[in-house]
Image (cartoon, rainbow, N blue to C red; front, side):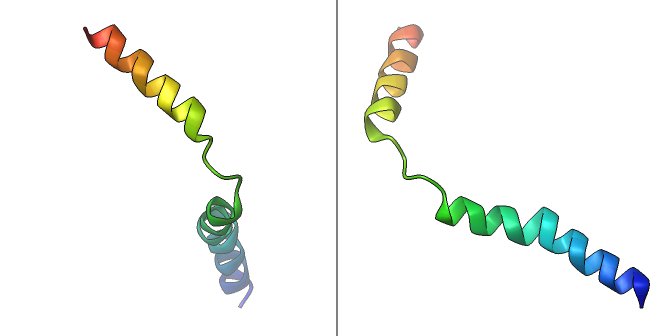
Length: 45
């Protein structure tokens, strides 16, 4: 019984919570993403 509670708690802390927080996190900064992509393209040339 104790082991089940520990495993469920670990699953929530390591799997469920990070997934939920990734959906509720801040939006993507499109300008920064665009600039980073341009820098990567320029470095490859």
